[in-house]
Length: 322
Length: 178
Image (cartoon, rainbow over all chains, first blue to last red; front, side, top):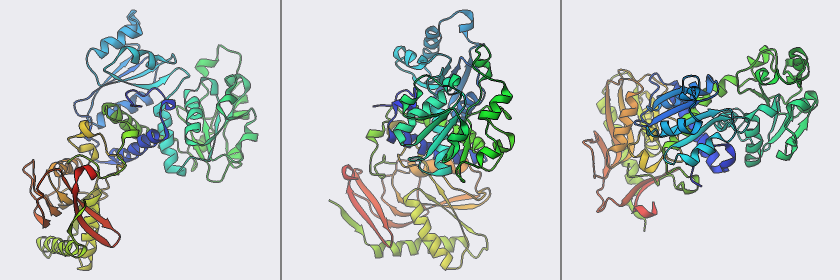
């Protein structure tokens, strides 16, 4: 399989995942230099097309592209022609006619990227989050952070706590866990769990305290209050924090070297207590840092149409005549 | 099909000559000698030179470059599957640098390495020392010092340094086998 687009973690095999993570790892150093610029994507054009609000993901893609010398253009829904009545496909085809190499798309509807890829043949498409479907660059980021924090994830136990039903990151982890061999426990009140979530092969808990022992990774999700208020599926913020918030007392029952992650933005005092978010177990800011590096790797792979992990030479010396 | 070009002894003598050249060019200055190896072969050569220079009493600062993201053929070949991070932990501004590689061929690696170095700062100078010069340059780049010379009959020949723990040799083989 050739990686022409990146829709989700589910389309990748183990080798391709490791390839992208390792390339991202090599890019971390670039962001620590005094001059944060390499010529890797010189002459490439990347358009960030965001139909949903996003600060960190859009900024992360923008910085990743710019540090690799690509020309990056940001378009958000409020300024795009869709607000004047243009269809999604027309907007995308109009932009594609300007010959960008990569379109990075976030949309509230699952499957947006696959739909557009059927119509845009020349442009690589990267999913920056589509509905509750997938968020591949976030999970690749998490996997790079985990590589640094605990090494190989195979056999480890990740406990994901919170609004599983609205979380594309949770879904991406459920899919990646099967490919990479880690165990996932999901913890949420019944109203925040998708039906038949156990079919993903995860353990399902409604009681956080019962799930926490033996966890190597505690993955806290933001309570997406903007999506919840209209439904009656949510107790008060205070009640939620009591039952599903991560605090010192709970963290003490996880494995001693347990790492705490959060895809952001976080609500301090709701899903995570402030002292934990800033504490020694927290890898939340590492995730942000690694996000830029992983997106550099994804953009590089997208601009390299030869990228194909199956074809990668086994002999490291088999490079060009350089 | 593998043709042994240089034995372990020949490679070791070449490394001795390279270290001597660097030390004499550096003069009697107390300032550290900055060696920057190009991954992966050049980094091995730079390690070997560091050992020799330190045995001779010099202070050495080491860095390594991975030029994967600076290559001019990234579109053609894609990034290398085993990419390392560049590691330059010291300030290269106003420092005389010794850039070290194993085999000098087209000069494109060196061009990319110099491009990357300038993204770290403005060195006082860059000198190039290579273990083996195989000719075939495609750019106006020459080494300040080469330990060994060998010009193969064809550009299709691959020349490789095999740096096993304590046995280093240089071999020649058809590129299709490389």
